[in-house]
Length: 494
Image (cartoon, rainbow, N blue to C red; front, side, top):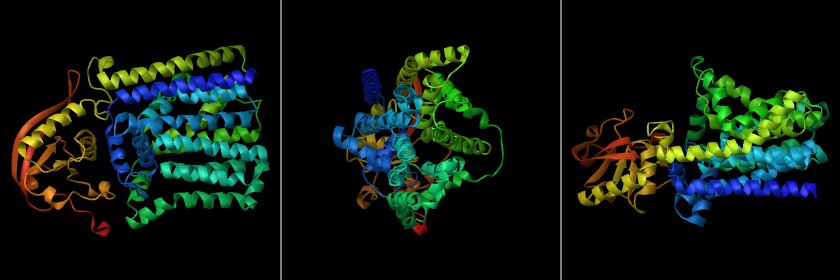
């Protein structure tokens, strides 16, 4: 009966948190990356310039259910928390034989800002975290049952994770280190089962490989090029821990650190090693990466299921001295209210700016507050000027325009055609005559006069968040292009 009540409490808590996220999703405008991924969902393919295809599929499913709205774009991403929660609960229960720890792991995972904001703001990290939780569940089932067939399930979960984001490649070394570190598991290296699981993962990932082969390995080159070391610096490593404390939510981060560093008396060596290896393999790589490049906070997404289980071990399994016990209990009690408060504050801030006194913050450029109103003004100018198509410079503005302008409006990015290679270009007649050029004033792009003989400024429009002017756009009517209206694709991709 106690276990039944525990499961019921977890279900109620997770559903309440998911419901809160659905409300946040409905009231918050899209980020430019979300709008960009939404454009992918209109032209499904085996891969894209920036990422594998699963985020586009997630968005496509959501918009099929709820339409091309902010809520529809984010719906399935948020609902992925449900299977992810199930997988984390079962993994913790199998590894540590504790329903209480399993319940804590599930709740602690869901109150992290990584999961809360990382599912409301739909990115490849949401399906990646869900798939990562099932990788752990498959390995836990393998450990408990000893049945080699579970390697096929592990391979399938890794394959789905790879369809989400290339970071999932780290599960290869994670699993290998785990097998080598636990003597009784080394026998699997002589068995065909792990290699069959690897073939399953490769088969699921194969559409991405085929797409890259057909597109001059463009996506692989872009993402794996980040691993290149040009020079070393300490400027990024100081960002690493503070950002993870915030994204993990401070009480959960503290418990996870306690769980990872404590000398546990409970749980098998294999179970403890699985959790620590999953966390530390990626963490150590990203520490290395931070010595020569910035590590974005969301890159740690695949370790969060394991991190939550480590936090639950500290909360419910480890035998602490009185001071440690009091601190662990405090963190556990504070985790839910702190996590909910952080998400609430984030949503209020990105939508209004009130918490920063209406000044700029880190979110102001990425979240599309004011774009619905701005798009209406741009559409009015387009109709008044008789322009056939709207041209923009960066992919973010292009994506926002495609989402917020009336459905069917011709919108194209003047540069970076590789980003839109899966979508057909505008019809030739749409790119003739008068066009509307949205100039964001960025120094990243050449000026419009280099590309058109006729440039007529017709408006200056602002995107605002409350009293704050976020962006100022020069709106030009252009005609008589000096060459191609759209930047041509590289020759190898034609």
